[in-house]
Image 1 (tube, one colour):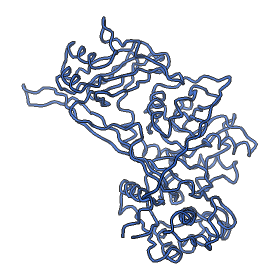
Image 2: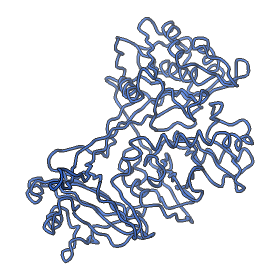
Image 3: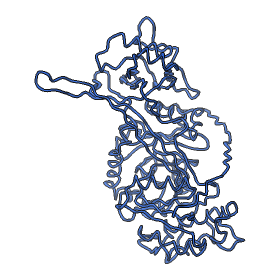
Image 4: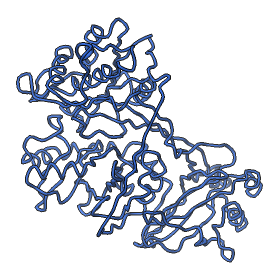
Length: 563
């Protein structure tokens, strides 16, 4: 039976408070070119538009470097940037084998959480590390001792009981963390996020046998970051068909003011500008008249690239193609397809607590408690939901963990067959749907609980199904691994929002065709579009670690009301 759409006829009222950041005595950071390019791109999204006004080069305030234990100890793998009310973590380059933007969410930023924990332990954070693709972070003091972690990945709770155990906890499982990074690097998005950029040192050779190009249509505007200390900025037609100087002239005709008249491979300085936060970039504009651009290019898709030298004498290229044949949609500035539960501010953030023989209550019962607490709270807006889910009709489910919520969470454990294992509250995936009788008893005969598990359903299918339920207004419980795939590493958390984005690009490569004397090399190009989805996840740790991120679910469970 299909769920009732509880998002229908909801009027949305969103307020964006303004704030000002004052930076005094900043320590300037030299941000890599790729990070600057990511900032330009991500600041066009509604959720991250505050990036435009933050002094991103300030190492004492908004921006903090993050390292990885599996990479060179001096290599900054990520930069965490805070806008005053939210944060974003960006990869330094494709060398990380990670996405360009790995996570973002509301404050407090992860490094602030680590610093607060270290302070409670009588320590100071000197260096920050990202241990896993799923956001597990640690910090070390000036002696290199690990003194804080973003959560306890062994017991699946928000905080470590004894920080002195952290060094051994990390050393105990180095291969598990390394395996996670290998799995992340193998994902298609980990490659596609970086392919339109190429980089080599002056003495090196950039391969021209294969390119990935970002499409621009008439009227398109693109910003190309130039990095710190850039020089020798040029623009060239991609030499696929051995096109001569006439095609360089045609390219210059359809791009606004970018080529110098006397030497049309040099970029006109008038199109180079700086953002309010001091990022130098080229403003690349394609003329808006489709007919004019099409006639100038003889209605051919024309590839080209911007090339410049970095302060480290690296030669950097950004590849583009002018697309005239189809209006293919690249990732839109608005962030693509979005959806959410009806009343995000009414969704509770509960935490695990010790109970039931000295173990933690468990992430499964907490996840369901948050979902049912939400239903109870929105019964005041939507009479379809019972006001007796949490208690009697005069009692509303709290937003935070209280004594009454602890009793509520514990009441769910027997239905889910949650038991103590090594101090944890462990719930088998196959038991998560057993909450159905409990829900029906309080909600009525139309209450439904559905579950989907691997290997019968692929992760990509469950992501799509999660989007479908969120469009109807129902929170989705995802179960996924937050550590290395071991039994204890599973975690259940609740998704309340989603955004689906797409990236379109042209892939060109040289191929040999024909036989013997007739054998020749030809460039073959095809168009591709990749889609990916991020969810806003409530981790069930009292609000700690809530954020936007991609997930690879092992299971999906949802409670809803049928028609």
